[in-house]
Image 1 (tube, helix red, strand yellow):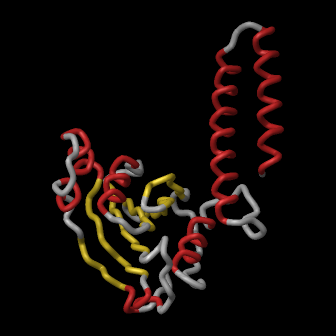
Image 2 (cartoon, rainbow, N blue to C red; image 1 turned 180 degrees about the vertical axis):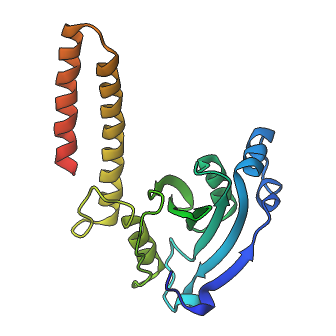
Length: 205
């Protein structure tokens, strides 16, 4: 992570510290137990540890390593952790010798979205910035690959990325419909919708 020594925490957080603290269903508790092997609070990014000013929106950034029992990233559990921790969290997921990354987008303390890397994808995070909010934004932009993030405001980047994700989901549904459709005339109609959706995506990418 190329962070200063005083940012290192390396403290194991017991899993029950999360699911005992919050009122959750037995199903989610069991999912926590079955899918997560260990959680380590690895780094704390703050005014003192990075010598960077905090902002009204971002006072600290935490980095957690979540050792998993499989390659499936349990998003419900991440929501539980994010609910318990008021600060943004950069997750490092570990399964055997494989690594992946994820981060939550929080606006005014409210969880808005998640961004994930591929397994074993190399990401060079940059933890320098005018303040912790700018650092947080730079981290999130590392996960957004379909947009030119250099010439846009952060809110515009997040908005356009969300639109792209929605349109990609809609396109996938249409492609699945075309694959299942047997009637030629219906396939023609679906193809027309697919072309429109592809053109819409081009406008944002």
